[in-house]
Amino acid sequence: MTLTTIFKLMQRWAAAKQFCLAACLLVCASLLLSFQGTRAPRKFELVALAPQFWNLIDRDAKLTTVADQFGFTEGPVWDPAGLLYVSDESLNKIFRVYLDGRRETLIELGDPDGNTFDRHLRLLDCASVLRAIIRIDANGKYAILADRYQGHRFNSPNDVVMGPDGAIYFTDPTLDLPKGQKQEIPFQGVFRLDDEGNVTLLVNDMSQPNGLAFSPDGKRFYVDDSEQKNIRVFDFSSDGVVRNERVFGEEKEPGGVPDGMKVDESGNLFVVGPKGIWMWDANGKHLGTIVLPEQPANLAWGDKDYSTLYITAGTSVYRIPTKAHGFVPYLRNLN
Image (cartoon, rainbow, N blue to C red; front, side, top):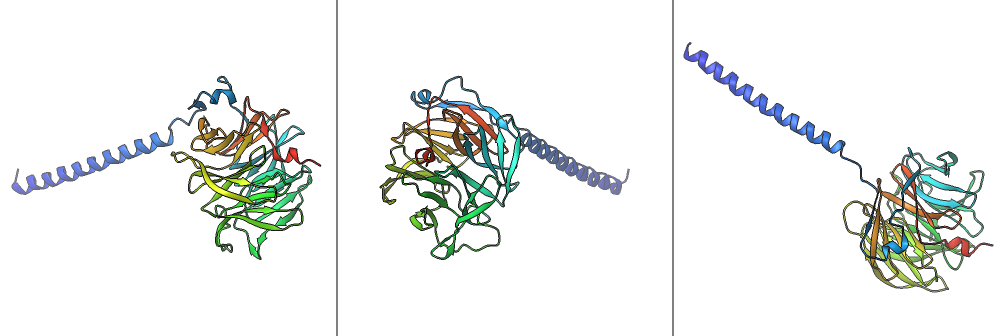
């Protein structure tokens, strides 16, 4: 064997070694990606951080799926007729969802978000694409109640609640500002809308205001901030003015951000947060978390006694019974 032949063999061996190394790296990367793609999904779990947690939910409470295979669910509202209204931000529809899993389209609407009833049990929706608060009738026809503040278009109304004074309160972050459209209001606000269509600014110093709720006695107003990952509380007066802003609690763990919230008749808060629904007492103590298989976005009290939580999470709608009795603001104002 000549020296030249030996040199060529050495070159081939080196090339083969590099190829094997590259192949090994490729196989390792593929296995890693495969593992990440097939990780076990998050499981339902009740995680108590304080004994009071079990005063609000049974240790043996079961989470069940009402319906699935949606795009992205939001804004559940319980109808006393025995069904839910649910927004689908991906399919651009609001559905009537029945407890047997059936669904029917109420309206096709670009990126609908949070919903509630008014005091006449008419459906209100935060219509992101329209950049408006709208009212929808039983036939799927809508009317715009408000889409501007001082002549400027809202950003993308996100969640809505009836106030103790009968007015409509809503958040207006830029989270769903339609692509290609400009922000006209230079802040992300919280607003009040009265029966005459007058829009009043309440809060303008939050990064991305999202879920909101009132305490049962009407003296506290809660708003969470998805970017700051906290819950703020304000003193509320009967003239529709909020004062004395302070941080009620923080939800800064990985796995999700503050979003929709509801309150029970005792003043406990049920707030979307990392991995599920965070339960807080009225003093700002985190009592525990309902961990869900999919990251939730919003929730509503339902069933005849309003003691069941209906939760919109990812592609599904879930339900879980509680020991609490839900505070439903529009039921206090029915006329």
